[in-house]
Length: 323
Length: 112
Image 1: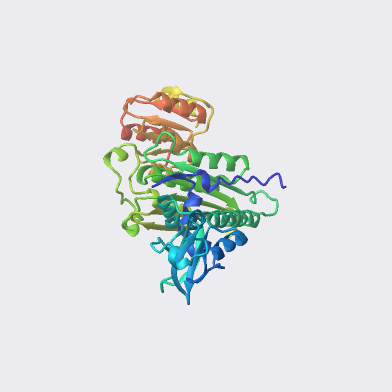
Image 2 (image 1 turned 60 degrees about the vertical axis):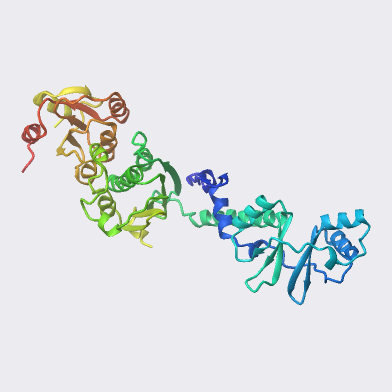
C-alpha cells in the first residue's frame, strides 16, 4: 500500500446514538429502519391444508428443520401449527387428528411492507419464534423468524463494508503533493467552546506539514473553523468531517438538529439567532456561513427543521480539481 | 517592523512573546471573530477586547503574530497556555481600541 496514502475512516458505527430501546450502532439502526419485512422473510413456504393430519406437519418440520407451518388453502391464510402444538399432540395422543382441529388461529401477523425495526419489536414483545407475513390483500406471502433477521443483517453489513471499501479505493490517486488522501471525522458537542477549533487546527497543521500554499490553507481552515463553531453554537451536536482527495478539500458539517427555518435568511451577512451570551464571546455575528461561502469554490447547504443541517464546502487545491 | 520594536515603541505590557523577532506588517482591530477570520491580513497584530482562548485559535488560523488585549483586561490562564503553545504573542495595553489602533497605525506606517 502507498505509504503516502493516509487513510483513516472513522466508522459510522463508532458514533452511536440513543434509540428508544437502548444504545445501538447508528449504522444498524439505519439498516433496520431501511429494510422491510419482505426483504428479510422466507418466501419458499412449506404449507399444509386444513385436512392434513398433524403427523404430516411433524414430518415436514423434521425434514425442513422448521418450527412452524402455516395452514393455507387457495392463497387464504387460515392458521399456524407450531412445534408446541405438535408436542401437545404427541403428549395428548392426537397426532393423527387434523390441523383444522388444533391449529392456532388467534395469530399475530406482520405485513410485508413494515420496517424490520417493527418486526424486531414484535419479537421482543411476544416471544414467538416466528411471525407469518401477509400482504395488503391479506394473502400469506412469507414467514419471518429470528434466523432470517440474523442472516439478512449479516448480508447487509457485508454489502455496506464492500461499499465502503470500493468507495475508498475509488479515491486512490496518483502520488503528488496535492494528491494525498485523508478522511477524518470529529464529533462536536453543543456549547463545547473548550474544544471548538480543534478540528480546524488539525486540518491546518496537516496541510502545513504537507507544504500546501498558505492562501489555500487559510481558506480551508476558515471554512472548517466557522463550521465547527456553528455546530458548537447552534446545533444539538454533530460532526465535522474533512477529506482531501483529487486536489479537492471537502469539509462537511453535519448535525441532527434543530435545523434552520429559513436558510436564505441565515445566509445573509449579519443575520443570526445567537444569544447575547454567545455574542459576548465574539461569535454569533451572522458572518460565519457568509465567510464559509466566500472562501469556498463549491458550497451546499441543506436543512430541515427538526431533522438537522448538512453543509458542504469544497475548496480546490489545484485548479483542475473541478468536478 | 519587528514585534519587539513595536512593543518597545508603543509600550505594551508583554504577557508572552514567543518570537520577538517576528515581522509585523499589518494590524487589525475587531471583536468579532468571524470578522477577524474573514478579513485580518497575515502577519498582523490583532487589537481586541476578546480575552479568551478562541481568539488565539482564530489568530493562529489567520497567521496573526500577536494579540493585543485592550483596557488591561485580564488574560485567563488557558488563553496564555494556548498562546505559548501556538507561538502567538500576547500583549496588553491600558488604552482603548481606537486610541491604540491609531498609534499602531502610525508606528507601522499604514496608509489610510
